Every structure is written in C-alpha cells, then in structure tokens.
Image 1 (tube, rainbow, N blue to C red):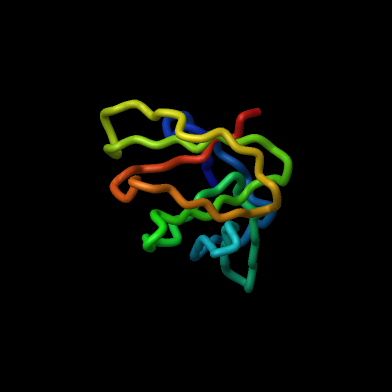
Image 2: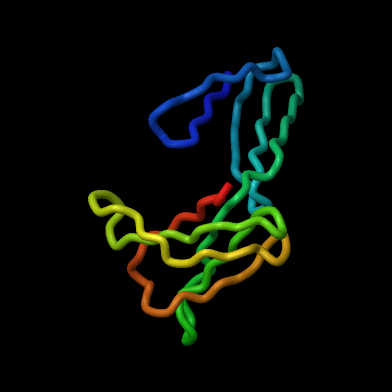
Length: 118
C-alpha cells in the first residue's frame, strides 16, 4: 500500500498494481519514485509536477530549477521560516518549457514552494 497527500494532513491510500512486497523506495533526480520489491518487481511513478529544486548560491543570487508543464502558470511562494509565518506570493510565471532555471536575489535564507495556479 502507498499513501499520498496534497497538504500533508489528509492522506489517501492506494493499492499497488502488484502483489509483491515493496522493499525499497527512492526518489530520482528526474522527479519520479522507483519502488523495488520482492521477485524483482520494479515500479516507477510518473514525474511529480510541479517541482522545485535548489541548485545553489552563486554571485548572481540563489538559483532554483522549476519543473512543470510548459505553458502553465505557477506561483513561486516564499517565507522566512519553515513554520510559523504565512507564505507570500513572490512571483507569478508561465513556464516556457518543461523546466527552467530561476535566480532570486536576497533570498538565501528563505523557504520556497511552487504552486500550480490551476
């Protein structure tokens, strides 16, 4: 059984398309999950979109990689603490391709999330 949540509070259970026992689960750089089970069972999810990945800090600022559906609108949100304060909209953007890089100035100590506008 696998469970999923869109908000971290409400969870939905899902039956796997195999009767084999799942032994390991890993998240890939491609944004998918791979489950490895008994009797050589392997399952891979589709990409989890949208996604946001930190690429590091350079002279130009804090670099992020956004992945999502091209032509769709996303809201980049930020806040200064992991818990406590509310998220604020930092940028509304339409993703030009399946992924794009973004540089944020002065946000080295911020937390980010990417929200699908639809």
